[in-house]
Image (cartoon, rainbow, N blue to C red):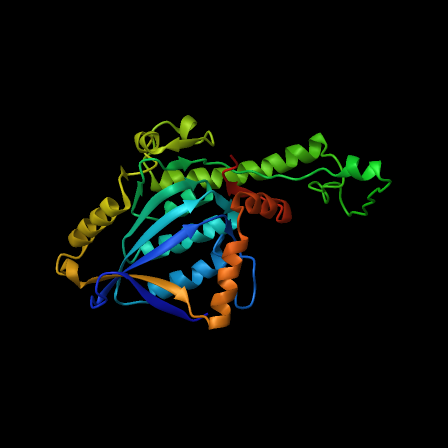
Length: 294
């Protein structure tokens, strides 16, 4: 995928770059829409993010990343992939994350890869937990005379099947898997944050910004402009020999043809109900999700 730099702030003459990256919408392994529509504007694709992250890591003039987040989280594997990529970047250059609305569950995991996390005063942060959901359609199918039959090699092979109720053995088995995934999330929080009150933090609650700061989930509260100013101050301390006017704020976007841009615009207009998309994504992709379900 070919990426093009777009200047989002500054005169564009600054040699050193602060990359701005937006995480908006449910986090998935691969965003829906193939071909020219590699990037669904209502989803965060971990595969697409990996391309961006590699470009940033390999740029000798990169000096920082400003991560803007408004996401309920998403797939467990995809969320951790984002964290891993950000952690690799953080080992080279500073990252500031900004919660601009919702920074919950998987998107909070991603934010753990930043040096500092700030939040808009009315932002909601947290929902540290894991969830799996399925629909049991067996009774509905039975009413119309349809019965599913399964041939399996072991009793737990179809433990998550939507064509039958879940028994206690299957539930206990799946809860064990979920508990392991949850422990992974908690470990990353403990490694990256100095939290106060684990019972509250790991209750899967979302917290308003003031609560999140008191619990140690974030470092500060302010507008996006205040957070950007704080980031520049941080960079000044990290790179004292670089004047602030030598920075350019840039964003990486995929290079597209006019036809591709038209399709992308149409796709954006069709995503009118992202919260419904999140539910449908969960049902279509069984497995653990780090996602906030209001």
